[in-house]
Length: 295
Image 1 (spheres, rainbow, N blue to C red):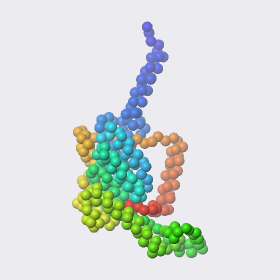
Image 2: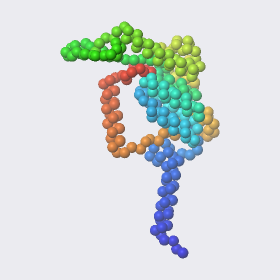
Image 3: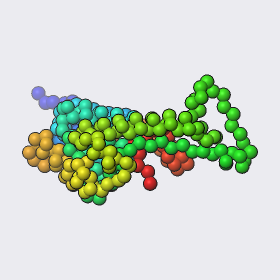
Image 4: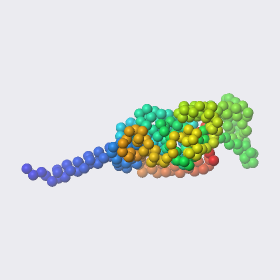
């Protein structure tokens, strides 16, 4: 009996649709950044710019940790550091995923302060000879606009429940007790940084203190000091991660799939990005306690 051409066409169309759905599932999304490749891969997570939030990076690390086709992870760092807490959270997320898979840190132009803290969690650290790294230190910034307010005839009045409630106020000088309190916060945060580097890099805290005063090192200098393991670029780091994880052939590097956004979400994202960039120009420095190298 002859098959109806319409039914045959619908069946072929259904098969084609199922085929493309399979490709999408295996490849991580046709419109994502992740490549449509099969086999054993090395996942690449990128940390760029000032570290203000850890959510997206830790999510990507967790996703690669659960992906059976990803045998190792490279964390590409091009950052001067940033907030203490997000840097620590990314560091801890790397330690967690390292229980399942090998992790290699790859340093770009700069991987300093909080950027270096993140790298310490990896199994191996790879830097280019000219990478700027180090800056093992903690810092807080406070502005004082008291004289400016006097010139324009403005005064500030504060009602508070405790003497330290408006600590760091830009409308008055900081008292000696307030300076001592802030210094204790910075010192404790700095000590936490030393603990991490000493443990991860197997360097005594006494030896570490001699070089952990905020100074920068080139990648080559850092290697001599034991802060970095090897010299190489991102491609070298990917190959190293593949070797450590037992991948025999040249490993394919895959990237996290980008989240699909609606038209209005894209408009909102662009507006927020533009606003944040303008605010950063005005503010100059990030607020709060930071592991951050600044020129």
